[in-house]
Amino acid sequence: MTDLAVLGSTGSIGEQTLEVAARFPERFRIRALAAGRSVAKLAEQVARFRPELVAVADAAGARALREATAGAPVEILHGAEGLEAVARYPADVVVAGLVGAVGLRPTLAALRAGRRVALANKEVLVMAGALALREAARAGGSLLPVDSEHSAVFQALAGQRREDVARVILTASGGPFRTWSAARIAAATREEALRHPNWKMGPKITIDSATLMNKGLEVIEARWLFGLASEQVGVVVHPESIVHSLVEFVDGSLLAQLGLPDMRAPIALALAWPERLPLALPRLELAALDKLCFEDPDLARFPCLGLAYEALRGGEAAPAALNAANEEAVAAFLAGAVPLPAIPGTCAAVLEEFLGRPAAPLRDLDDVLAVDAWARRAARERLAAKFGAAEAGPPPALSPRGELA
Ligand SMILES: NC(=O)c1ccc[n+]([C@@H]2O[C@H](COP(=O)([O-])OP(=O)(O)OC[C@H]3O[C@@H](n4cnc5c(N)ncnc54)[C@H](OP(=O)(O)O)[C@@H]3O)[C@@H](O)[C@H]2O)c1
Picture (cartoon, rainbow, N blue to C red):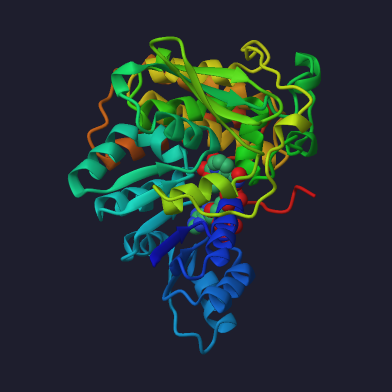
């Protein structure tokens, strides 16, 4: 029996994790769940999976959840303490399925408690890759990738000698604007940006996929997960999302992992590794494929990908600044306050300003949070100055749900 704790259980990754677990009840037990504001959904999960501990974003949510689960033997916590309690709960695998910087503390807490972390929440490694690896090494915790690209690389690397790896090549669908002109992208609406051609995901990652920032964040994630230099992580656009990524070895051989785009496959692998679960998902029929296409990414139309490489070359702290600027700009775009080009524009300006400051080492979590806070302030000021976007408090719910049909 594998005990699971799921951070972000009401999100796209969280719900698919619970679906995989429910298919193998003799194999997985749900011990603890954490989510933000989807109290009704969480109450249903409590009734179905009977976890012992549940956490929600705030006290009002906790009260509402207590009412909705009256009589259920479950401890209900809230806020940062609640998230960390779920992350540290004695489970075999902690699924990091929160979105954005809010996942940093709990994921570090899980690693510090020596847990195996199935990592979807890529922003954690973007913000604090070195710190996360240090915490994991110190406490015996480990990271298993959930992102389909990193899962593909992880699988292609299995049994290989690290010194034989020349580079990894992450595939990118190209998002909904792959064939659009720069002018058309500049005028894209929120609904158009949320219409991803191949994947149904939460809103933040869907916007990141439209700007290719998602691929940039994944480049940084790959650097830490696989111990690579930035020039060893390449990106190729592959609109069909069948080849999930590749590893190139020193002899020129490429090993790839293929499958239909379905996150339940990499989630299941991260939950059960090194076993593979007999998932009854639709299979890839090679003969039914028309063609597989590959092209170079266009950094002129999608500058966010180039910014991620620049941040990676800019030292340990620069990716944290880029991530914070991106989160702020994406939240403003999702709130309808700014146009799409505000995202690369804000990220570029904040990164440039950050790189012009004296280099700051990231010794601990406080250092990371200081960079994050500085970059958020800089991004908000710029958004307000340029677009009149309200200098709001926290981004308008990191999970405004339901935009996708
Ligand atoms: N979705 C995918 O297919 C996919 C694929 C690869 C990687 N990823 C990565 O996985 C992560 C999750 O993505 P997603 O698409 O699953 O996002 P999502 O659908 O928006 O779900 C986010 C989850 O985080 C919770 N959350 C947000 N803010 C919170 C807060 N302040 N306190 C507590 N919980 C909070 C949400 O709770 P409520 O909804 O209850 O507020 C929800 O459960 C992201 O880092 C993304 O890049 C996702």
